[in-house]
Amino acid sequence: MSSPAAWIRVAALAVALSAALSVPAQAQSPQRVGGPCTYQEHPGTATIVSVTALPRTSPEAYQPHRILFTFQAQPMIADPLYAPGKVHEMTLTGGAAPGGKFVEKYGIAQGRKIPAAIRLIRGGTCTPVLFRFQGIDLSDRVGMQGPLP
Image (tube, rainbow, N blue to C red):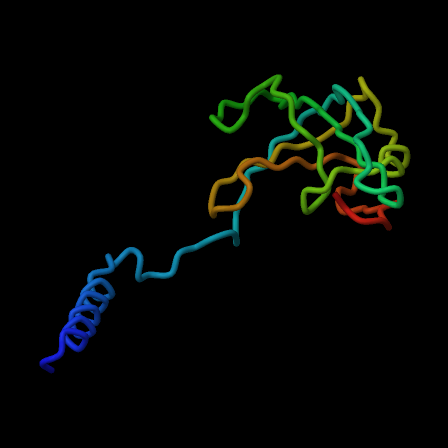
């Protein structure tokens, strides 16, 4: 091992082994990402603030809509994840914007009040705040045959 290249390879290997062995114990243990998650549910009323048609991504794509709402818990709750009067966006399961046929099917219109529930995370690393709307299936992809945005 008298050549400089051999010494460089040995030094690089030593540095790599040293780095691998010095990983903190926390990083070596498996991290929990996602579920299972637990939520606490609180009833209330969602009020639709606006329903706006968004541009299509292509001529054959469905017409996405941006639906904004506020939520009022009943009874009132004290929780850092809940902000009375905050405007939220209604999305389908998976995050897509609802289409026009969804808006029609569920009678979603500005000013409509919908019995709903806010779900606040209590365990896990999932979405911290979720909503459930009475009579509205957020997994319903009615009219969404075209490409999703």
